[in-house]
Image (cartoon, rainbow, N blue to C red; front, side, top):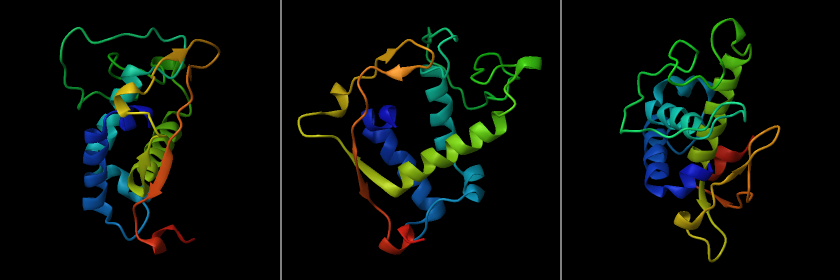
Length: 154
């Protein structure tokens, strides 16, 4: 979410994609996740830029690239956030599904406002090395509902 808030144009494009598929009268469901290629590309790019484990070596791209056809399931060694081969994470499918559903729900259901005086460009994206990678400065953002009021009722 921090990367999306830092790039409001990409957040708006993801919201537009979700609105065109789902509309604004209901929440995103698991069945909608196969039809969101932009959101899946955002997740791939996030895994590339921010490795989920501190043991993976952080890296940057040496040239511009397209990663739309890269598989996160360990068959392409350009991007292996869940490992590969015999040591691949057993929770890979659940992790990808839940990550996609959670991000889609947050992007589709809310607009995000930063505290007073903070701009998207000044958002600190540094991480601290430890057992897990955590942000140096916690993300503070205020969610603003953007769907129909009935969509949030359970």
